[in-house]
Amino acid sequence: MARRQRRREPETARIESASHDGRGIAAIDGKKVFVAGALPGEEVRFQRRKSRRNFDEAELLEVLEPSPERIEARCEAYGRCGGCSLQHVSEAQQRQIKEQTLRDNLERIGRVTPSTWFEPMTGPGWNYRRRARLAAKDVYAKGRVLVGFRERHAPFITDMHRCEVLAQPVDGLIDALSELIAALSISARLPQIEIAVADNATAMVFRVLDAPTADDEAFLRAFGEDHDIRIYLQPGGLDTITLLAPDSIAEPLYYDLPEFDIRIAFDAVGFVQVNSEINRRMVHQAVELLDPGAEDRVLDLYCGIGNFSLPLARHAGEVLGVEGDAMLVKAAAANAELNGINNAKFRLADLSAIDGSEGWLREGWDLLLLDPARSGAQEIVEHIDTIGPRRIVYVSCHPGTLARDADTLVNEKGYTCESAGIIDMFPHTAHVESIAVFNK
Image: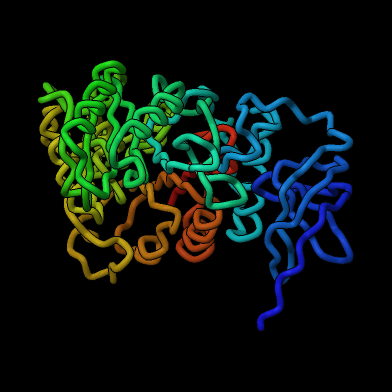
């Protein structure tokens, strides 16, 4: 028989330092223990949850001696919910942690030091999240349907009643969603809800593993009418999403970029930047930093639905947006038409599989905008000589891959890193979004 794992008992230790994601670090018998929610200098009680070869991960049970930096978390579910990890420190301190993470990655991995550092790009700290996926499960032991994010230390759904970071009106609808799902005959077959809060409407997409009855649909329709929410059902893949209520809609979901007189339509499960105010500021800064003129040709890679491409097209001579998702390419082209923009084109290409022979790479691009996923833009920077831009603005959602790509650009390809800084897209989390500028 396999030996049963020994139950971990609570321990007490002094936190000596902090990791790049804000977890406190204690050293016990020569092994590091990462304690989520603990701050340097604090004495804490914790319980180890995961053992690794070189370190362990632990759950904070009690703060015995708090740090002067500690503040009271605003959210009642904080500490249990995995949605936020830094509510126990001020927003200013959160940004310092994130900026230090970016600095350390650029120096250690990228061997790059920007000539200047941007001030952190900041926005609203609460009710900022306009896109989210909420899990749902009828939990007998709790006597209710739980709706929310997963717990921090377990795959269970957090028992929560509201969410302080979700955009209004969804922030206060957790209990209402719980009651709605509990009333459905398929309550055990509805595992998640996709949330999208646009400038003009709010949408919810209910993933249904069984077909709802007529009474179920009536409950869902009433919920949508009561809270002014568009209700969609998703019985299968993304191509199965259908509008349930209201019967029809006059216009798609959209957000505006007023500075550029741009309106960008998106669907209820499509990718958009989650923080609308930060997105507006980010687009402004990216366009300002690239500074395209009427004669410039701009290449926007990982272009999505045109978030950067269309504002750039207001100033540039020509813009080409390239994206690996066919649905996003189609949406970007539709958004160009919606805004009467004729100098922006879009094409489909797998940017992780380019080899330098692609014709569109060789069309003489003056400026380059990069906004890749967490995996970064390694394949692109390897072929940067083929593209040949004089200036690059790189928007990153992972400091490690930005640093890796910066190493290639600066230490192999002859670019200089002019400036860099963080974008606080996800307050109260350890997620580090950033922007960097490279010149040939």
